[in-house]
Length: 499
Ligand code: GLN
Image (cartoon, rainbow, N blue to C red):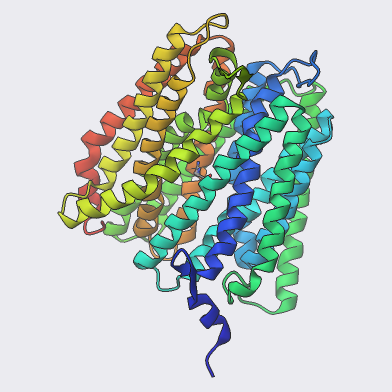
């Protein structure tokens, strides 16, 4: 008798993909809806005046941007333990489901108007996303055990789900949050996540055994491992809470910006140590060492890229609020609506780029990884040059047209389409034997570091004019892009046969 679950998996009924992909597509779509919907409000809410009918928290830009950077950074950093929990304790499905509920509770917590529930909400979303985000992607991979082009096609469809959520979330949450009440916007994010979870649970039957627990060990051994993990986590969380208390009471004299800077430095030192350890003591062959060098290079470039790109929700969002004229037909468009543009452009242009890379490959002209990274950085730099130009003409009294931001996001999206898909896939190909998931983790750390720097850079808006800030970012990123072009032949050599 044939195995019914594998029949279900191979039944292609969703855009030519297995039906199970629809389940994961909509789970990720709703999760990103909640993430980007809330993120569109986050910095506006934190810096919003307390003296309004829809009161914000009244934080200064530096503090708000540091919180934004720490929050968005930890969202990605916690995918490391999140992936570990799924692999070793729970299986992906349970991690996604539990993580999703933690996210939803986090958003609902932010819907309560108090400082404590606000910060509790951010912490819950960080934990929940760490459990959910990396594991949805692993289950997608699981649906295509054969890998190769079919899996790539599955991921392209899945990426559309991410961006459909990224498109709709800011539209709905900003409409409610900016227009009526911040906390309604946060609730809408929570409801979106709950819809995603109901849909996910109902779709288990389409997943076959993808995402079920496949780790080794008896039930007792796993329970013991679980107890060990949660005890350590509780101790660590306790220490963090004590530290937070000491900072908030002024016993430890550190600003949030300084904390973010220290965390960034610690992450950098740890990653450098990890690379050096692997290089000298990891028992790697000389080819593997060369590939590891390329991964380190990709890590640096990706961190620089995200540190510009991820300012979308911070400095670019503030620019939209303060320096663009958003009145159309007598109605002021919420600033957060401009957060949807990147996702909209991805939905429009991703298929075009996919076709273009395939066509270039067919005539043997596919740019190398190093060149694609350079194009990504140069696209990002072009966006920031445009924005610096626009910002130079904008004042609070005479705001400029939002078209400046639209063009900026266009260039940023082109950059993302050159760099992001190729980054992840080249890392999987370059990873040393048996270190695949660690190297995927490195990719997430690069994103986390980028988000942290994005917050720190945006915090400079407190003292620097927007046009100078954006110009500085544009120059640094452009230099990184040019260095990447110059380095690309060496990178190609180091990569050997890997395409
Ligand atoms: N927009 C994509 C997502 O949300 C990628 C973001 C990133 O890796 N920084 O999944």
